[in-house]
Image (cartoon, rainbow, N blue to C red):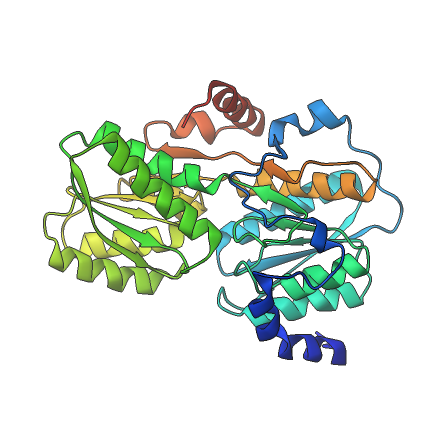
Length: 362
């Protein structure tokens, strides 16, 4: 990938951009926006309401190129999100170029990819930032160039004009309610968080703890530690927690990669029958583990569907449609018991998710 001189300058200025992020925008365009709290943003619409409220997707103009910047492709979730982009892109007759940083900690590498896409004239960018701040310089540059940017899960760029993704706090709420409903005797629980300070990790963790504390007096969170989205780190962390708390009854993990590492630690400790592990994302390996009776459940955020919705929104923006700032996408806590409801054919899955949304199920 060719990196321009401009990219090098922007990379050197990244630290300054991070410092400025909380107090001032680098572009006049972004100055009109309030910092985004995607979970609570009032200008929002549900994913299934997009066509209902905005009409059919306008036909894309010839030559539209969509640039998609993922966190990394080493995590299946982001590959599945990319599959959703490409599936919707093929249907709409537009080209989607998906690129990603080498790892979930390569923030400068991810910024370079986004800036390189801007320099090559992409029509719109779909970005899933590694942190709430690392892609802000590219967002500012895109605003000046009048290139729409859509923030797609799960870190939230405070000055993003459009966000597509889950209500992150509800992820933790769903996990907590599962414990309350299925483990009425209560007990000790540990939380394996994502990367410290990232919006999704903070909201998921806070939603879990607040709901657990509000809806039951029988649980105690004995540890809440960042796993940085990493399987090995989460294995090591879970091993230590289990040694310190041999009577632990469960783990809630902010993603499935970490949850699978925790499952390995639980198995190594011989506590698979005692310790519940709930993950997040709905990746293939998580479902294999669920069906094998190891991982208890995952809060699936349906990445392929999310990618389709994001691509749809990006084309509507290019067509000049006014789209609400936030489009909320679905999630569901899936276990071996309700697997067939959500993991059948696409039409049945969408029907189930719309039923959930209309009934307010959590």
